[in-house]
Length: 176
Image (tube, rainbow, N blue to C red; front, side):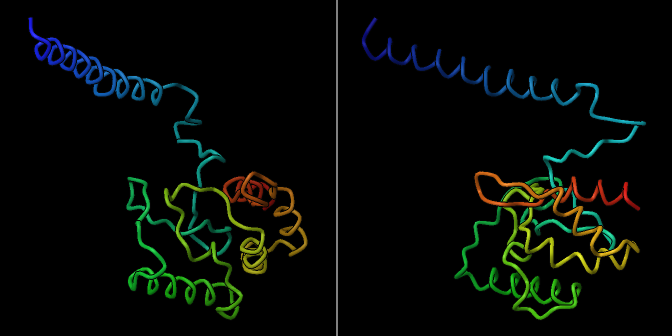
């Protein structure tokens, strides 16, 4: 057996093993884990505080915009110098300013720049604070109560202080 034949055989064995591991076993394992009981309550999916869930309506706090096209997640790879990206950010800034009843210069950056995965549950305290008056008015709760809920769901992390929107909206729902 020549050296080339030995190397080719070894390469094929590695290819076969990796194909089985990454092409069959790993996807099967992920499928099995996704079927684990406990992820549903009363026959409905339970939202987790680890994933951003953006609810429609003025009575909810909103997450960051998503660059993903559902049901997939992923970023857009567009930079700040990209004309399409700049246009989208400007449109988002105008829409958020109008929804919140403020000038465009008061809209925080995370309100207009997309989360790469579209699954991020966190927003900045500034974006949460911007939304407090609208949420309080829509829910009928006093603004101070809404601010207290925001404070309860604000935490410090490796990337700085953040507000978990999913947990905040759950608390808001319970407070109504």
